[in-house]
Image 1 (cartoon, rainbow over the protein chains, first blue to last red):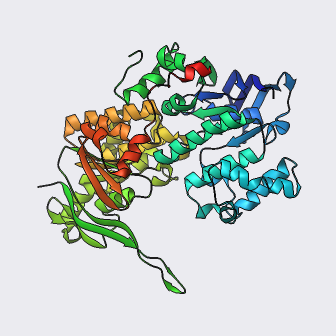
Image 2: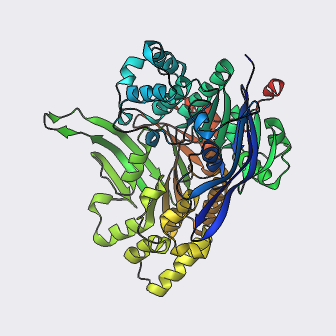
Image 3: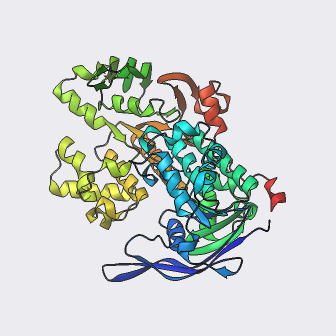
Length: 262
Length: 267
């Protein structure tokens, strides 16, 4: 199987508030390769999540994308064709990402319906996808409502739904930020395994350089809606060039009592 | 005399429905601890181990099912009116979830001024001055005071909550995962700020967290909780030597400072 490449080019999004136009994502370009994890890092408010939303055209009210070109292997894609079919998404707060009055089975069926997969064969894939995400008792769990599950279980379910869609790319927006550290490690290990086994191309949005160190192959640093530096992960940690990158890496290393270049 | 201490504190919950009471759930089990003036103690444990319940008990938001919480040697439930006011002023709590810890209809100024209104004799003008001073202390711009919580970022709101806790010059601040939602550089600067205040004012901290990285940097000793009990205590400098399985799994979950060199081959 040849590996696909998803390229975001010249992405620009702005918000209008009290008559003033603010650019949130500024002429941003990123390339996600299947089988690799690209981390998009930056401080809160730097435009990380907005980049994902703008690429998939799921922007909040008041924010509009002014320019967007997304191609997969050079072929132009409409956001509506990307969502769910080419790009699966997992989000920071698993609890608010699920419909509280629907069971896990309803969510799984909705995913199948959205990507146009029908029949017993399609439904038969639910349990294996859940097992791949580390949820072993599929039959029991499918009957549960979100409030009956822990944050870690919900995040695994979200990953299972992403696998169910068979999309080659995954946008993971702060996937472990709200999780207990022990659960966080398991979810990160799971993502790493899935990238290897299923050749997923991941855009990992995070502010935690520890997650980046653990998981990423490449890193793009965003500041005020612009990519200020992009490099392989070793470069970013050992030879950060831009001031913003140095600040992020420096603050991260200081938690371990270390310094850049040490 | 310890600033705050607990003796054999337990907390149990029981839910009731039409068909009767459910079995009792033990959240805290026979906890005894003491925090001295000016020290920083870390309380670590996984989600659901009872850390937050203990924090709420220590500030008097909940009362224990058994055992006593003592403030300066006196049981909290027998404090006189005057001492109770001291207790409420001297022991402050910063919650993890800042949006739900503030009134969304209050301005930032009103939020920070609230403890000043209840627990100090400052007048309007003095309160405003104190609010400006506190905003400066937590490195927020003065014009933020007129904003509503929904108009500021999560990191800014968390610093507002820290400012509110600092407002009445407490002797102990309990930080319940209070920095874990902040960006890393903000975590670092928040810890620096708290450390500086400790040097200046001799304030004590109980630092509730699941992130052992922060413990070594910030606390002098560390208590490990698991399933409602304190299972291990150690000097922060020695956390690598922790033995209890709950502590070991937290240690193993610490993310690496630097990427693994092996990954370079993959590139």
